[in-house]
Length: 232
Image (cartoon, rainbow, N blue to C red; front, side, top):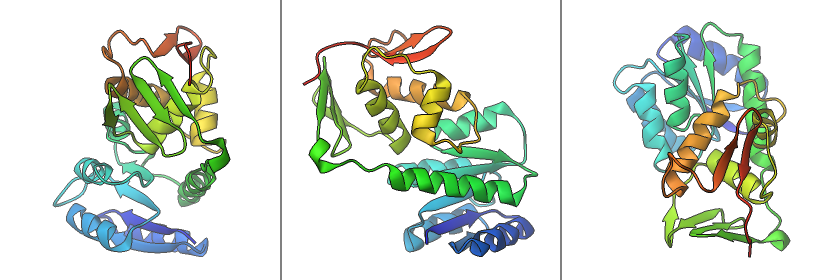
């Protein structure tokens, strides 16, 4: 089974999550501060991280930022505050989902299962190897590589999934709900703002002028679509 890293300085919460996840046969490592979290991430190579924001030594935002420099491992962030700014900042740093304390451990386990199931199913048949090109953008669907103006661009797994889905269906409008369904999975519990944050990040990485996008277009009142053009 998958290996989960739980990071929370509240030992009762960390131990409770460890117990709940181990009941589902996951292997669980626990860290109580940001420094220990980064060390265990290197040593254990987890398949998913449950990461509290308010941590001693190094906070959860910085832990997420450092991990995202090297890995697309799924991250569920935990916050004791309901402030939208915390949720949005966590998503911008690359978190896949978030939960606000207090929460039901069974709901967190359900989210862990959904995210891991989605991650395991996102494979591409080598026979379907395809490269999409439009203007200065090149997307290699098999190797999961994106180049803009002949320079490779680093995308998170969710950013690449969003881009490849939209680019594979140029001109088709996807609602936020459909994008959540396709990229995050049927069991995702988050909201549509997750899509908006990831689209904004994606535009910052691939658009010549993110404020006036020419590739990923907003269809007001509907959702998003990829510009129609010649794919090779």
